[in-house]
Length: 449
Image 1 (cartoon, rainbow, N blue to C red):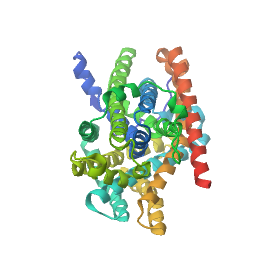
Image 2: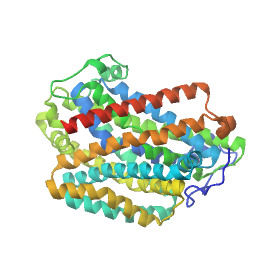
Image 3: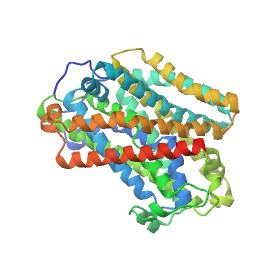
Image 4: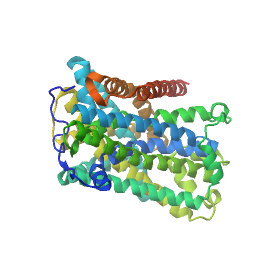
């Protein structure tokens, strides 16, 4: 189903050549990249605390939850690839066609707030990492994040392939750091394998004075799929110069889904490593020690907690990985902001101005909180938690139109979702929305009590 719309991300659309009559690996390399930018959203600082706390409180029990949430993410991102390649529109543009101009303004506001909420989490992660590594006050660290717009402009001038390579390098950095830390932690691998099998204890396990295993599971699943990733992926897949024919689109869908699943497998492994690290080092210790980034950092440098396994190095690598995770959002958040602004309301502004506005609005509540309550990590991390709750509210705005459009033959033609995919997609959507509602209720209950 074709509609007349502007080109999504015009600066990079149809710019990456695809070799003809090439081998599978050469074609895969040409299509690889968008998945890396998408995978970043599945390993943000908000997921770190949830995964490590899950391991510290309940051992390897919740590994099966990470597996389930990753499989749902792969399904949704595959739908994003199909939508962008077949319709020639990103999710924001397609939703505007579906909902009409008036509703698009409302949906745009929700999407913008979701991007800002994501940015808040990344700003906090970066500021805390700078504090842990260099002792910078949180206020100064937050202000420094305003300057990363220059880093973004530099990479935008180099082209989309350089951006993809930079982000993938940061992902590998995080991956190798936590692989090394888990290797030093010497987890019980038999228990790790059993953790991927769902257990009834997920629904019954509860520690006195702590969140239940089910609530932490809700946090892992509910906060995994972020709305901005769906808009981003549906646009980035169009950066490849594939043939706009039935066969060309079929090949593009195949390779883009392969790329997406490969990169999301990295984020799945990283999230598992975080939980395994929490279980191997902290399970059985006082749970109150591991609720915040600084507590985790100091626990990793404390020989009484982690033993004599290069404890100082463990803590430093943890902070470096946190800094890398925070910087990834500099690029993906801005690109997504451009996509939703141009897609929903056809408004175009320079990239540098877009970045300053988004990052400025994201840092404002953090600076206000620090000003009134002081340079306290518990205050800014409270903002991080509530930003994730807003993402839960915004998620249906992107998920429901995605499922509907990719399951509609008028939109997708021969590429429409199969009945099995539709069934699984609807179940996944209902599950995610229900879990997010539960997470919102639990958070609101805690807040008001």
